Length: 173
Image 1: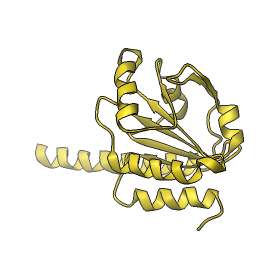
Image 2: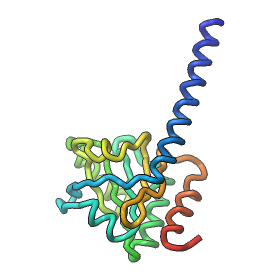
Image 3: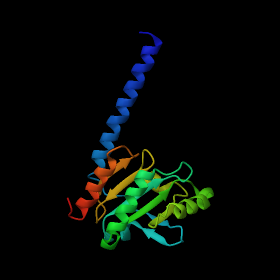
Image 4: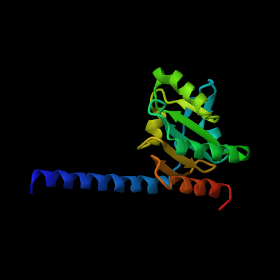
């Protein structure tokens, strides 16, 4: 086998492995309880998972200010937040920029009007607990803390799937 064929074959195997791992992570997460955490938001308020998971369904949304935001994902989250906030729904935006980029995160939050809870994952503690694979990553969590589903990255059609998942948590289908 030529070296080129070996490289192509190994790339195909690598891609298949990634797909299988992603499917496995997704199916396992459906039965998992979301991680417990404490964090300070950009206003200095203490955010706890106990309070978050007890008030209603929620989304934990991982993103980077330095890479730009996925505008389709952001628009979708804004729609969810506007429609369901009064029913106990909450979003926690977790910026993976580090403490040196807090000013950039605050600027992005203001520019993109991200009115939900926003934190900077200073020591990557939330990243380690949740384990997002790609950014943006969306963890949809049922009231009580069970993980409903996980989206790593944003692909065509994810908006329809996420909308169905969120609406299902509020008895809409």
